Amino acid sequence: MRAVENYFNYFTEIEDHFRQRRGTTLLLSTVDWALMDVWKEAGIPLEAVLRGIDVTFDRYAERRSKMRKINGLAFCTQEVLAAAEEMKEAAVGAGKPGRDSRAESAFPVSEIVGFLRRNAEVLETAQLPEAKHLSPRPIARETAKMLREMAGLLEQAKTLPPLEELERRLTVAEEKLFAVLLAVIPDEEIVAERAAADHALAPYCRKMSAAQIEQIHKQYVRKRLLDKFGLPRLSLFYL
Image 1 (tube, helix red, strand yellow):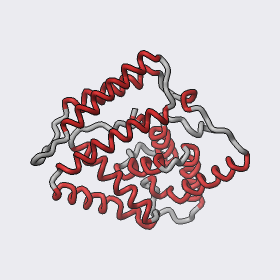
Image 2 (cartoon, helix red, strand yellow):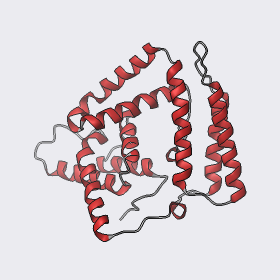
Image 3 (cartoon, one colour):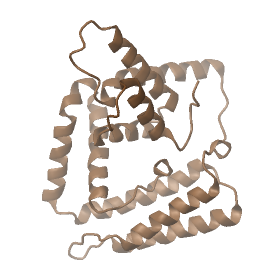
């Protein structure tokens, strides 16, 4: 049985497993990556996602009619959530203790240090949009400085702090940067990205609840805008 909470390989494990079960080299779409973001943010364990994918494909294989193929992760949503609920109930019943994330890191300190410094360099050199009396450049430089300081502290310590604490700081920094970026981007560009998200999500609406659609919509637009200006995701999940 695969590890439940491998902190770093959440996305790649899901992608590899989905492609293996589908039996093709189909690349995951922006919507699929946004959905994985939602599952990660909601605390859905990796094993629950893999189980949900397996159940989805197993049930598909039992169907007589196979006109519609499983072309994306959204088709697995209900099974993933069901698997997560089953695991939660089983964990409560077994009284499982919490895990120490420092002991579960899949990467050495040097890789995290390199990740932080690479992102700092990108933030320092990014060509960012500006609006009258408002610019994201100062906060980008401030964030880059923070990342370099974090990298230096990790190098000196030679060991990792609790990964949840490190992740929270990076998430807050990304939220601040994105908020300023959103404020300077012309409204018509944001409207266009939201329309693109609506179009991309349309085929999956029946497979997801309104709350799930809203979360994925938000993540989709964010990813598109950050990619447009070459800005990195700061979360350790993108290491």
